[in-house]
Amino acid sequence: MIADLVLEGRVFRGLAGGFAEAVAVKDGHILAVGSSDQVANVIGAGTRRIALGGRVAIPAFNEAHMHLLAYGLGLTQVNLRAEEVRSLDAALSRLRAAAQAAPKGAWILGRGYDHGALDIGRHPTAAELDAAAPDNPVFVTRTCGHMGVANTAALRAAGIGHNTPDPEGGVIERRGGALTGLIQERAMHLVKQAMPEPGEARMVDAIASACANLAAMGFASATDMNVGMTAGMAEIAAFEAAKSTGRLPLRMWQVLAGNPEGIAAEAWAAGLRPMDGDDSLRWGAVKVFADGSAGGLTAAFFDRYLPADTRGVFTFPDETIHNLLRQYHEQGWQLDIHAIGDAAIEQVLAGMEYADTPDHPFTGRRHRIEHCGFVTRHQRRRMLARGILPVPQPVFLYEFGDTYVANLGLERSQYAYPMRTWLEEGHHPAASSDSPVSTVDPFINLLTMLTRRTNRGTVLGIKEALTPEQAIHCQTWCGAFTQFAEGRRGTLEPGMQADIAVLSQDVFAIEPDAILATQADLTLRDGRPIFDRHGEYA
Image (cartoon, rainbow, N blue to C red; front, side, top):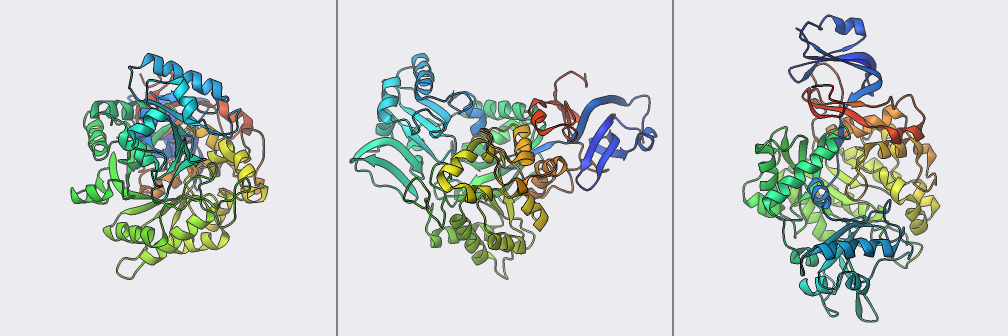
């Protein structure tokens, strides 16, 4: 059998297989991998040959936890992320420019501010947003996605007044009885309901743009967490339309919004069932929120935060969330449950243990705790016993680690996102980004796993640092495992899907600080390019 394509040079097969000198592809699958001599016998006159030179080929990245549609839609929103916006004046200037370019009354949406990184050290206020956009409703979402600030017009459109009660699991901030504009956790749903929903064409464009950006970074697979929280059931139709029109180049694992305000119940009534779809677009899981974010003081902990007399916010009482988890488990969905603080993780574990019954056992279900940032040893043991997977975001340490130290203290922060411990104990931590909460750039995630260093230079828990091989394993095979796909992708072994990323430099042989200069030169899905920086496949 003659190969369609051979990549010759440094090839990372996977954590178990190590390195090879060449990999051959035939009909979308790995035909052979090994030494140059071992692969030579499948090279023929029609074989396309690409020399890697000083580069390296790896299994394509798998983004195990992000919000792909929100990321795509966010590309057209006002960018307030901390790497670009560090002052209130800069944030207001960007919002003012957007409002001046928009029709009167149109919503102005901003994404990604970090109040801890702003020069004022606090959230913007409704009055400040009013001054920037007096004729438009404005809502700016904090980088964590668990809170945001609305101006007066947006609060009015959402029906929020000074006497509006806090919804269960949500907070409408007031000072001296007056609204500040800050809306937290489930209270954000009030504002989102007032926003105009994007149409299908816009959502398909956003999906395609997001996929193109990820492919350019070496991803061939991704996840959309919490499908339905922007446009309800129309999001399902938008993904199906993107697939049917050839605008979905990534393999997608889809997670339905399962909170009562989500679409899981409606999707079930409409006939959607676990594992519906195919290897391009699979509907596999339901998401439920247990708490908020550590940076925003809403992740739920046993111990108090340092700067405020709070232990965070539980999204639901125990009985409510436990019944939700049992319902979705018994329906056959994978549970992908957001829990960051140790108290929230405890609530979720207790609920999962309640759902694990002889009639509906956990064995083989691969339920997940998303983020799982501040987990105790006892909790890790219980997760391992039931096959519950952690899906962490090491990049949180890079972007928010110093905020963790300020909010939680150094000792608790040192043990956040314990990647090495998880691997050594036998877990399969799928390193991911939670984009657009954090950057989707896989090389920042990789750098963080190697150094445990924040973007301000603070090192947190160096004993949890990984080798490059382990870090790539967490960004590839572990993600595939969470999606029941490790038998098809995540390694470059014979018979596996030829989902391959060619990186611009050998990330296994350079100093960690050089990794941020790395790019994906070529990304293959089924052996065909979905991104080709230099036209090597032309």
